[in-house]
Image 1 (cartoon, rainbow over the protein chains, first blue to last red):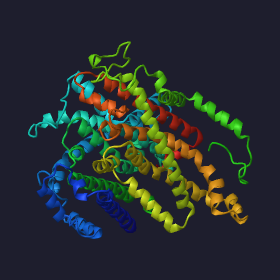
Image 2: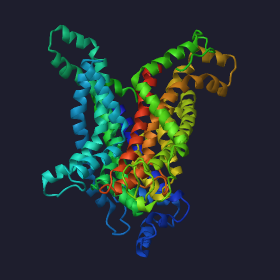
Image 3: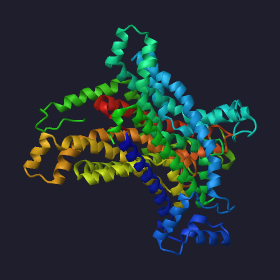
Image 4: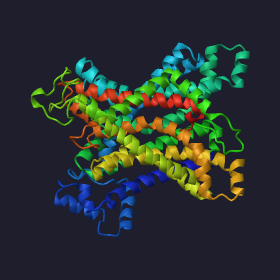
Length: 314
Length: 297
């Protein structure tokens, strides 16, 4: 377990370092003056001077990277070109909203997807199983940003059941919930299918195991066997899937946030791309990657802890 | 696998043509596979023959007829500049096809090469490449794409680059696994004993054995690639106006969502049909030719 933990942690660190290097090199490999590219044409001379001084742009490039690296390590992600606010603060303000959206989406998807997968696996090839199969493929195949746009069109613009844009009044809990429904629906829909398929596949495998046959021979109730014995083991690959697929979920939240003009990291990155405010983009992308890597790491460690076979595979 | 290898001494020669026929008939008999095939053919035909099927020039303006609903003159209505949405959707399919075809072929080639190097080459190279694949797979794609666009500006080439880099690891891992399984089989060892070189073994003996599953994986990657293109174009970070793409049609429709629903409906339907078509076809092919492929992706 310990060596697996070290290897896995090492890999995560390498990945974040690569992201750091990529974001740094991206700016310096493009022909032209890095300061002008990073700050865009609308930056004031003061902002340019401030940035040039902070990033030591007249020093050799490896030294600049070292400066950037140490700044990031100390939690300093630079400053907004226009307002000079700390990027760290801006990103940390936007992060909770995105994490809530991702968590709620995943939660409702799991609440529906896992039982669907279980029930399909209990009666393979029944009409219920076939229907679930087709629906799973369909929900996986339809791009989540299209679900966002179409649900916005149908439920917010045409039927006017739910609010169109924003995250709701910060003090009003129910207003916030009503603003969360459509984005969470759009982001989570694909996951219902993923989870249903994954759980079905691993349940089918587990249901053939000897210990399930033993449980049957003991005359335990089918429901107890399925939910208490089989699902417990069958859920393991699903946990990894949730970890690995968090990237997809993040992309989904990016689009949902932009389409529903909901504050969050995705919306922040998009707005800053449009405003050519690269320091904020750089910081926000780095934080997103770090969060993503951390969640994948946690998922993998949980699985390794639960399933000894995984530990030997890395 | 698509066909049996007659040059492999471990596999007895079989009548491969009749076997393929059986599999093809299984594909056509399976309603998912059949639906997928029809949708995929529709996608190729509408994109290739867009000029034939289009009723208008996709970029021709007709301001007086702007924002009209579906009619005999404009099958899917018109946008804010009076351009015919139906014709724009047809031409948008060409962008999707272009990105999918170029992106996936380049990615297949690189994936094949890197996967064989990792599987057949020295241990350190294998570890280095695996780390590289893991790193790429661990990046949130869309977020990194946004960062790249922020600096380089939107272009079709950038979309292609993003698509290629993010899909390589999938193919490379598949090829690596098959190569490792094959490299100590008797027919490869025999070939080596006969003095065959590195290149000959990889090209003549390993490639034919991994190419089938790779094509199935490619079919299943088309929806991902088409979605990335449409998504970035939707954000205004892909193809540049006035070029029609499904994403840019959706974007224009999104801005007009309170005026007219038609561009959003017309721009989204082909996207859904294409992603569904390739997914259905890919899954049917996988189930028939290579059921093991579903895992470890």
